[in-house]
Length: 195
Image (cartoon, rainbow, N blue to C red; front, side, top):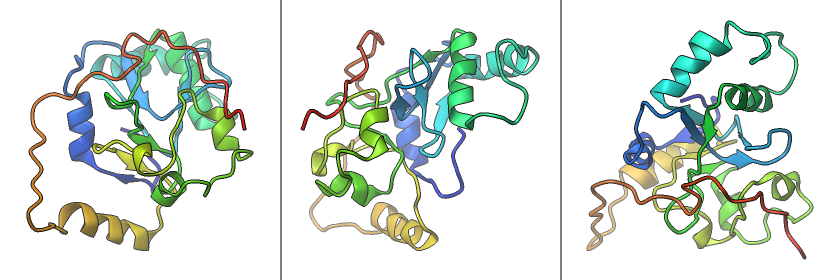
């Protein structure tokens, strides 16, 4: 997985999300954006993960062929990686949960959880590949990452996720994750907010 140093990652949820997939399939996951790459590309800040086969293709074929993957330091890292993956025939997978809720988030939790916190003219709404919800229904119960998390917020998330145990509430999440709504990757990119 590649993520920024201000990205909080719940590795247990990443493992759960990846559980139904085969490491020999050339696929990658993250928060999918729609401009610049036909199949979409993943937010570098929210992080992205490549299957074993995708990693092999990137290292053995992409890094050695400047026609497939850019070698110079120009361009945005996430966009250039998206172009590279597409050129290597690596699918940009759907990381959402069964209910279409996101798992990788390019912004801090409150930007996704508090309705109206991010105005509809903010770049995020024009970039997202799949429609996003605001409020508690924004985020999967098995969210993987949040970007732009300050060091203090990381401590808060660590406590809330791993230490706080509400009395009488048990989590029985086990087994394999259910497939996302766009498992076959045939959805057209979302056109953006209409209001």
